[in-house]
Image (cartoon, rainbow, N blue to C red):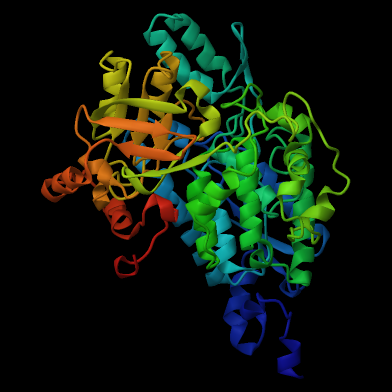
Length: 566
């Protein structure tokens, strides 16, 4: 008997586990899981699932995984499933738990690397849902560079109430401010709580979860139509099975993420985010994905593209429609068709075809959901990048969510060192017309974790104060945020940025059309204040302390680097 030939099962990467007499113990372990000898000859595909019973965007992902497994089996693959963590930003809002979602992105990417490399999978199908899970998985895909495809869990259906035709989580938070000011009753609020989110899936608006799911499709890492196929739909399950089939073919083709997610592809992602009015968090996640592939992508790319690609999607929170309406209009492919002239359509996708080939037969849609490119909702993109002496390395605003009357605003600083302090001031009627709330020490290092200031912004909008005052912070915002809110100020306060020098009553000018953010204090005085400041160090757990030691600034995507490399 030729032992070498007899014990050589396959040429795939996973042959590391099966081939040769020295792998007898490995094979025994595989047999113990129920595999047989024929299974050892098949490509081994990881199902990277983020199922959890805690999060509505993930609670159905076991079922989605079953459909993926069907597709893999149909084309002769063997699948093995494992899980990552999955944090719900919505449940984390307004308390110390919000310190954890952004750091979890790195843990997700690392945990996938550990499992894939330790067990030498040939490919992976990744099942994300909510905000940081999608970018964490895309980062892992870029890093590992084995065939990979994403099947995001999909949005939930919008809610309804007797006083509101469409309710999303954005509306729910703003109703708090309306209740506080007597514009609606507590009984109405309680009723809305029960009807706002009618079932599982990611929240039915263009928050960070659905932004990143849509961008995964734009980047070519999902099958067309996948991102907005709703969580409860049969369409989602069909695409899941098709994705299982497709990943086996991708192994044979050696079609890997770095062949798909090029710099030009990532710039397509920026263009789509501008057209859709996407979450400000895309300015963190796209650069972080690029970093994993040694690709340089900066806020300058966002600023350049925001001036060229108009905002055309009338989707909540910046617009009027839920995501179900966009899906009914053709979903992400319809949006890409509308801005096709602004894209590099030569980019490859997981279909094995280029973006242009995928869009060839897509119908052009122009209506109240997807505005024509010639008559957009706004001539510029949904995001704007600001610079100035208050943000030397940049700041981000969701322009699509700001009323034109607030594109230029000059006001007096009201300084707070946490979201809780600022929210209490708003709820306590301490914020007046002309105030600019300045929330410091909420950046990646200072938070630590770069918490979202969404509770504060929701109170401002819900109380009808979004044309009276503004907010700036080195923290970040939810994708569902709207109003005159400037975030991601870099450098952050904890890193000695000028925002740390702002004092109560200082004049600040926000000028979105001219992309500037100015502290009306002489440079010499700013430097004097910074030289004498005693920085605030917030309480940290061991996990957050390690994160703070390694995290970079928001303008770099808040990626982790060793201190000597920063």
